[in-house]
Image (cartoon, rainbow, N blue to C red; front, side, top):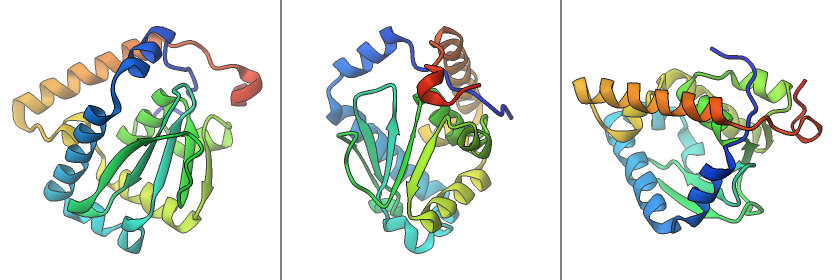
Length: 179
């Protein structure tokens, strides 16, 4: 597991994401969240009462945030303004946030190195963190792909993320807290 990573998404990728309409991404992410809840209900049960909390995840290298309510089959993901209020706020470069999700990056190291910032309900944040760590998610889990297709998807997506990380621009040390 990598301990410290704070590059920002390359400008070309940021422009591409900014040009996309939000509704298809919201629809795909909401379906993926609900499908994951069907396949792995124990992950969502682990959240308990916090499954109805609003988690605002803000990639600092994009102009929008994600509002996530992980309430099992009723879960939803919306693209929102970065200043949107929620129960928990998590901010950091997109590639770092994705690394938290798939377990390739250590959340404690990112937090203490000020790569990510968190605020809000600590109990809900810890429940989410514990559920994600226990899940040991791979990209194929989020896509709902299994077997050989799942292994191929994992390999392709992880290579693509690695390529983006290699192309990524170093975050400004003055704003990211990078050493």
